[in-house]
Length: 91
Image (cartoon, rainbow, N blue to C red; front, side, top):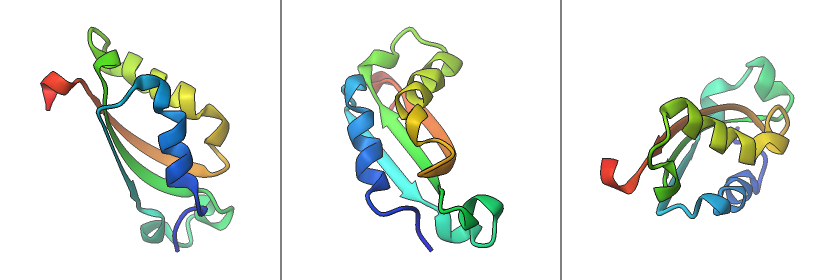
């Protein structure tokens, strides 16, 4: 089982305002088969994003930026999302 087809591309598209240097997305939906969120079709994803726009921002602020851009996808296409957000200097 994987998440909804096209979700990874949609996540990348929605993160464009961050002008990311790198985006890495892992679909872990198959590991959650039988989970309530999996039954509704929402996927489980691990997201690592690197952006200069995170400079000077706390971890909480970075996550809010990412979740804000993905808001419309949450609890639909995305059931669970783990975010790691870095500046280029932190990599």
